[in-house]
Image 1 (spheres, rainbow, N blue to C red):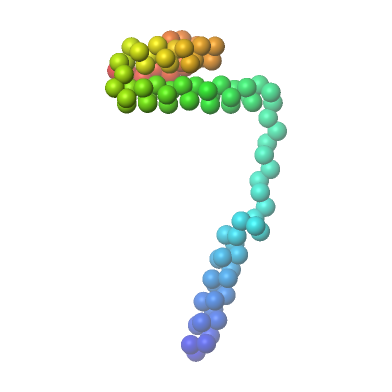
Image 2: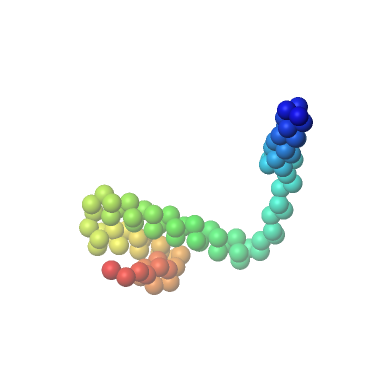
Length: 90
């Protein structure tokens, strides 16, 4: 009886390990992206980087006005408006 339980447990373990194996899983095909979408992705990443740098600026104790100036400079040509495409309450 113990042999049977051990065999079932081993089989279940092997099945679950095989199902999660990345080398056996078929990778999902990446969708074809238009040039417009690729540019949009690039803009979003650049805006994200600019906002991250603005957050680091504030964390460093720099004045909000100075950090805002830096954000505006980093976002020039990327987003519409003076908040680099993002406005939140203060």
